[in-house]
Image 1 (cartoon, one colour):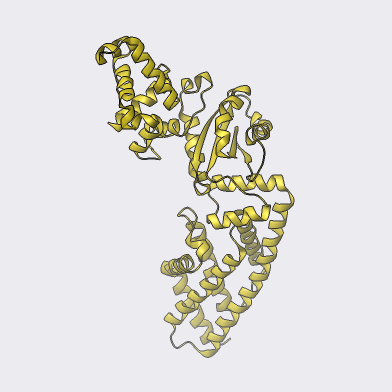
Image 2 (cartoon, helix red, strand yellow):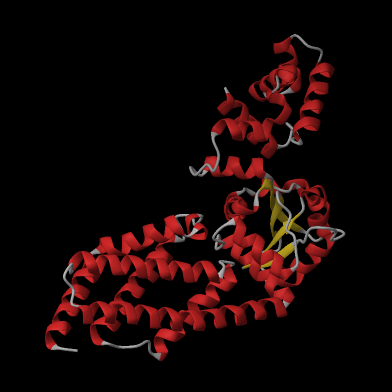
Length: 392
């Protein structure tokens, strides 16, 4: 390589590395041309951007110095491939992303040096071809090895799958489906997500020994879908079929555990459901767990609202808590509930509505039956009061 070629390549390298628009152009092209990357949420894009920035700088350095990938480069590419195997992003999509990035790099070089010497252009093309060939082989091998490891230790593989769902590390539902197929499982969708912890806070070790027991008690016959369990600190986290939610209260009560169960969410929202449930357990007052009550979506949303970080619109929270009471046909029950909360007693509410006290108490029992919330319970009364207030 002549001194002139060296100077030209180094100038272009410095210009491109210093220009943040180049990395953004690579990320935009990958996002647009590779479907798996188009499905990534905003939380995953910083990782893509960081890899693009490192790859751009490394490839330009190889071109500027007529270098080749070294052992450290290969280790990094293998690590990236292993991470993609763990989060379910297909290796074919990853390699295509690198090819797209190579095309953008070539276009950017051409834009800065429209009269690039033939030797420098050939050197750029050769560097990209050799590098892509090498990293393709290294990454495909590492990806396959990680996939085999995950499939070989089935218990660990299933736990890691739920860990990744909780962390939001799946690129798309398609990638999750592909990973589930490799493990030979079908996940419940929509699902029931349970986050539970021992009432005895001084025994965090109980989560490890109880998570499997909870799974056995709640999952029931395996049938077509697979339930998953993992541990987060002192808490057990379970992904279950929707039908399992009916048994959660009894099972947790037997073990002196408390929990929060979120139902009806899709697999693409498991991370959000976990955050909602975990925050609810963090912030719920002690009396919210009284009488073996398991916190639900409605409780969690009310607690998020009180903490100033609602995960849903107020009208949706009202519907979650009040349920059928929002129907016009149940207006008389909502009126009875409102009068009871406002007056503080059944007798006073009955007088306000010109009802016999027994009629008022009957309506309150119907409120309990339809909502699962007893207006006489302090926590239930608070959630009902908040729901009818924000609805109004």
